[in-house]
Length: 199
Image (spheres, one colour):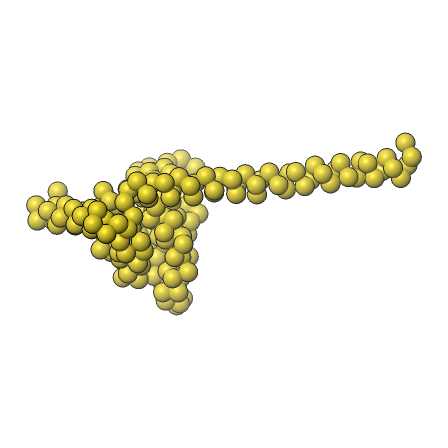
């Protein structure tokens, strides 16, 4: 259990944010000033399954394998800090965050998926901070220093709902459009053949 002073500090921080939003409306904040980044824990490949358990995110948005336990809850934003450093993910299900993953411990003032969309929007800034070496790395401070506008919870929820709807439309189009093109191509070929054979 965290010390009482730590709990008071977190509560105080959340109250200050609400007060600032009430007085000034949306405020510009640094991610590290309103959220805590938590680094994942190492697992070794021999502990993983190919199919059963919780997905394990290590150094990319593709699961490395599956583990019997989770260390993060569902609806959580995460950032890859080594390998595919700077990539931003969101898991709808519980998962295991390995040691090359930072997750965001949200406060009461933030909708988790809002942070996901903010970080996606600023992914170019994250990637510009990646140290290129044999294994690309992104530091905790580079993530914590990302600045963004923080509206109140109601506005965040509206933004997330609208972006989710837009994502659904786009994915439906990207899946449906090729199929529609294929059907129209077959229809074209059918009528072309009919016309050319005079049937």
